[in-house]
Image (cartoon, rainbow over the protein chains, first blue to last red):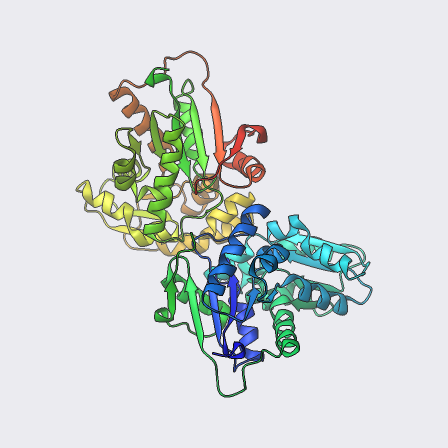
Length: 272
Length: 272
């Protein structure tokens, strides 16, 4: 098989990264995709940087062992380990969600403040702050962890009065800051599932940046630069690996992928 | 050291089992306790039975390696693996939370229906139903998973209008069943943190059974039967092990233990 015909590997701690796969399959339908959800060890968001780095390298190695041409870390928490994963998987190119998201937020914000919502781990690690500053941008940056958003999304509690009350609880302190943020960065791949209720709480004055979308654009650019695109003929294959509970992966994954997942297409794998 | 002076080992996927330790230290203050939270791999509630069994045996072995006289599985999900853990750790006695909880629920229910609230994994495995039937009780059994209760408790969102709205969402369908349940069993060690809001939703007609309390009673009885009690002189030691993020363990653990945890008393351990 030529390198261009190989699959693009994607991994996440669980199902949230399927929002990135959804954006990728929309932009690049002809590509083959292999998605790995490390469901036996999710969530990564409350784990230490050392543990997350170790798990991320194991996920990347499992995809390389299945002969992918590129690895996408579709998980904000694990993207903090991007440099270590790139080093471990070289020469296969690796893309995370942080840099594309930071770049898009800078564009959207103009000179106004950027608000980042993410898991506890991502907020504590300050990865978006670091990436925004690394691109030379000096606007104020607000950060807000939203720990309930992941289990809410996985339960399908993505709209209605309870979802809105919880979104208000997290977002109102951020929205009340002076000057108000011009842009809200969804810094967790689960959060696009809650985009409608988040947009209702923020109102129309604040731009939402979805790191799933921005990462898909970055992958498309890199494939082009490296001349690794699959020739455009029809729709590629979509395969799934999970480290635990493939049935639950298929059922809950549908919320994030936006289309049904055949439980038979999800293979159980052991990374340890 | 005589066996009686050794510590009682307790483990859970994370911090929730500290509600069991809280009940144990109240009933048996003179005992020494060693608590292990498998925070690197939490939660167990969404993982498969095979994975949970493997993790539970590793936790038990880590406690045995530190010379405990008894092991308490302070986790409803992992208690499903009780027989396998007992076999792996023999001759050290092992107690889970399921049987004591089931027994107390039967006593509380009379002939009325029992409602069990628990994680997705515990409900799906039907462990309480099996344990209640194994004791020859034939009342109707209702089961309701409450997936948001664990992250709510860990965030300290344990009272107020949002907590109550979520509790109503889970409990009202159960309370509306005919005949109404006479008893509600808190089938997850995190849930006692939400006891007040749960009691407000159920109203005074329904007895709440807290498996942390009932397990503490079972441990006290077994220590007596086996003549393993520490002589009553002063207060025993309390030590903690965590497989990840000991700082977070200490901070969040306080909600469940009901008293401060010195971060210096939490040792980081690797089970793999």
